[in-house]
Amino acid sequence: MISAFVWPLLLPWVAMASSEQQPVRLDTGLVQGVQLDDESGLRVYRGIPYAAPPVGKLRWRPPQPPVSWDGVRSATEPAPVAHQGPMIAYLSGESMPEVSEDCLYLNVWTAAKEGEGLLPVMVWIHGGGFVGGWGDQRGHDGNSLTAQGVVLVTLNYRLGPLGFLAHPELSAESEQDSSGNYGLLDQIAALEWVQRNIAAFGGDPEQVTIFGESAGGTSVLSLCASPLAEGLFHRAIAQSTWITPNNFVPLRGADGSAEEIGERLAATLVGNSDGANLEALRAFSAEDIEAKLGASFEVNVAVDGWFLHDFPEDVFARGEQHDVPLMAGTTTHEGSVFTTLYPFRSVDAYQAWMRGMYPDHSDESLEMYPVSGVVEIPFQVSRWLTDEWFVRGTRKMLRGMDKVSSPAWQYEFTRVNPQAPMLGAHHALDIGYTFGTLGPPVSAVDRALAATMQAYWVQFATTGDPNVEGLPEWPAFEPESDQYLKLGEEVVVGGGLNKDACDMLDRSRSERLVSEAGGD
Image (cartoon, rainbow, N blue to C red; front, side):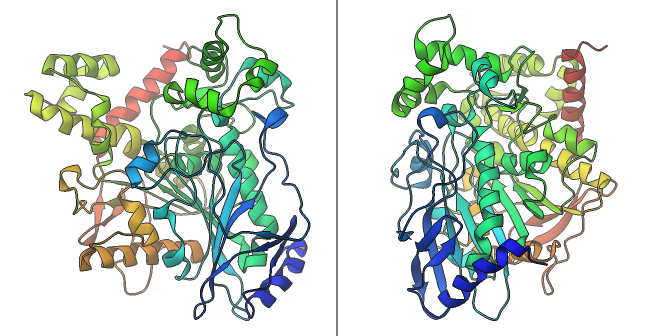
């Protein structure tokens, strides 16, 4: 059943199917996109505002409704992206796009046609550690995925200190007594925009799947746990969900809280140790804030009692997440691209660090990630990063699905990068297969794997179950059997992914939280 307020938006969509010149009517005005393919009817609309520019007095506030406009707004060019450094552009081989504090825009790809009904909607949330990335990156091009029968939305959201700074003064001015998490609140606003407007593009607002990779997977996890996202999506895909021991922190009241970190950074920005008033903070240009804080900013998602009531994985453990089907997975060698963050020069230094990380499990951790020579350190650090930052938290999410009625599925992406085999099946490699945006040369193996993954992803977005006739059966995740699907040169079922390591890491986390809470 389509909500009553959606039906008026269907009329311009129907007209547009027969005329590329017909603008699309949104709740804020008319937009005109670009016809990419006359035969398929594929169209793209770029740079649509989904919230008011978060500038001036709106900096470090929840997103406000977008401003309406007169006439027809051009939606043919990408909008500016959130302030960030050049790293993501460098890693993806792209030119750095224009950056601006005015960055809350999204893009829509659609090939919906009159008489064929509303299509499932997939909303992509980009990664980049909450400090980089944008929705219109080359690897997120929607042409291939949209051709499989979905409407695709990609979006920008606030990043770094402009998107995640918490501070007692910001909390004090908030009606919710909260600060930080502005980038995640932007994602909520984008999903609300989808509910109001996606039918105008032929998308079904009651069949919305959120999906994202790395910090985008962390966003998916957070949205699944946030009461503010209730009813805004109906399925979730979390790819390489990034959960470190400290990227979710209490808003206040503890060492390393989000407000404590924010106070320290604000004092650095203002240039004194006496705190900072909001007028002074908002007087800085976005360029100055990024220049002075961007490289050192510690991104934390705040457990603030409003957007999040608890650590998301603990919300899942109690079965209090949104009851929607979930797909979640990781790559085999997630950590290989991060090993330079841990440049140990000796076995002794590595072992001392590992004992400090897991003081109550030092022997077990060194048996789990053993080294006998310096050359082995990067390999074991990569294994540890893969388990600690990605696999353990993903498994915790999946196990929590046993407490709700909706099913879940786990995968492991195993395809080694043919252009950089030393990195293995590394972090973010799966994005090109998900979107069908693999650069040349592309082998038959990679072409087939991309087609298989897109079929599973789109089937899940369409039905809530990834299984497709003609492809290997993907068993639903059950904590007892721990089965998952390996996606690589072969597509086969596995079981107990990195189980012993995840068991040890889970025990360590639980004991640490008890200790921090003052328990025995």
